[in-house]
Image 1: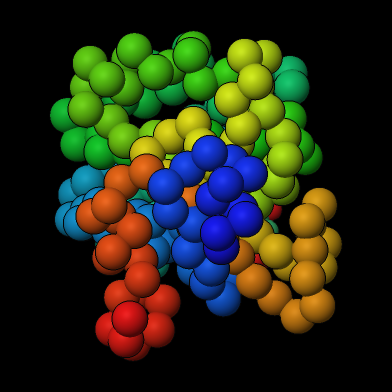
Image 2: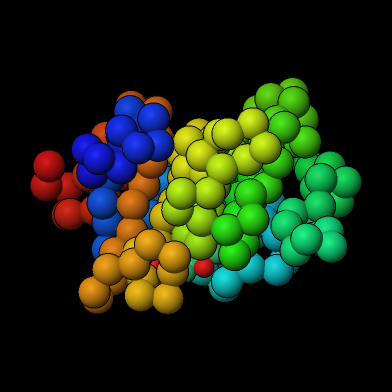
Length: 176
Ligand SMILES: *Cc1c(COP(=O)(O)O)cnc(C)c1O
């Protein structure tokens, strides 16, 4: 955890059972209600969408562009008064350029939660590493991912103390 946090330049790296738990715990830390909406790309591994449901919110699918990443134009069209978060997915290690939507997210108080399951070590055109771009990032260490371990694993990364503390409670039955 310490070396991941240092490598990515984030305050907190929290290891969990898998990438799906990483996403779900981050979203649960945002305390979403059933009418709250989280926008995610329609083209991703299914865990992106179901983690939103597992956290008690509603997934809203957004189209992708030719690079298979979230379409910033369609993203804008999908925003409603209930939109609380967006999950850009850095699919196959391609990094979604967050600057394209950051201002819109700031204007609407939309949290950016990165699905970085397939992108450990990837960075955007300005050198920002995935997992250190949004309010939190979720990595998977599943054997099929680009950084993998034997068995299963995941990592949550964040600079947000509340999210970090909440995820530490969620990962192990409230035990710290
Ligand atoms: C693999 C993957 C996940 C889930 O990770 P697990 O460790 O398998 O739970 C989530 N999102 C994407 C894009 C993935 O590829």
